[in-house]
Image 1 (cartoon, rainbow, N blue to C red):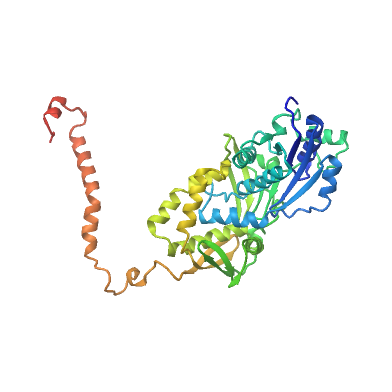
Image 2: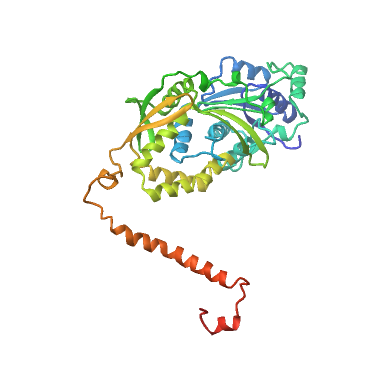
Length: 421
């Protein structure tokens, strides 16, 4: 390589790609490589990972325990923002990427490294998310992306390289799909899922029971919120990590949170993704229920108008951007007072709101009732309606006038003289 680097910090999972990368970086740059494995709740066994990294050429391995940070600082803010990408996707992978690569950059700073490296391909979103995070947090950092540099074009090439150099990997050429897991969700893509007409195989799902096989008896739960953050489940205080993990178990057995969609990647490619997000699906529904009582109508509409922008920033990788900083501040501000309890029914893949209550609710039965009351003068509505109808009347007057002049021609001389009747 033409570039001279002394120390690289690699985001390392121990899978085929990053195992080959570790050896390849050492061979091609001739520098020290330090590995970082981020634990965001992927439920993978980390025992033996350090020995594997060291045997493949790493000088050391850092394991970053990020579950709590991920839940508190990324997932919960996304729930406050009602962040749903393209109508369905709750952004589980997108939210994890800046959390993961923030830890990689922090290790690079502590270790005095002059570059970081990642295993994302040149066709996907993750390369953008990783690198925008790196440059935002450490502007002078160099980024090495082997998939955009090396000669390998397929998994077969990587497996052959690993066998040639004695790199221990368990991957085989046949791979039905790729999977990414964290505390929030599991995503599946590629392989047999690349045909958008083909239904995902039932044995693929790990977090959720098929709705058809879910219990025939519904389960009722209550989730309490304080300033927009879920804090209690059935009256018991839970931290964000425990809340999500517990709801994953509850929602999973009821078949909640499966999504199958074709989404638009940032680079312009459409891709088919299948997701399981049971716990956070429940939290979204419960949060919406409490918001319906506590958020003013126009404040809620303003927030919802920002959903496409917020989700775009997350999906595209701009978590550490000035606009996201302002949006997070806005959401924290309007969520003050979003405090209350939602009662939900979980049944065969569905989440139904049964009730909601809040100590500072804007819902006032005296005004909302269809029964007898003395606080609302119904005659006031007449003027309200007529004022709001004025622009509609004027618009239709103009349409009627256009019908009487089908050519639409106007005498400009008359127009200069004044108003044309």
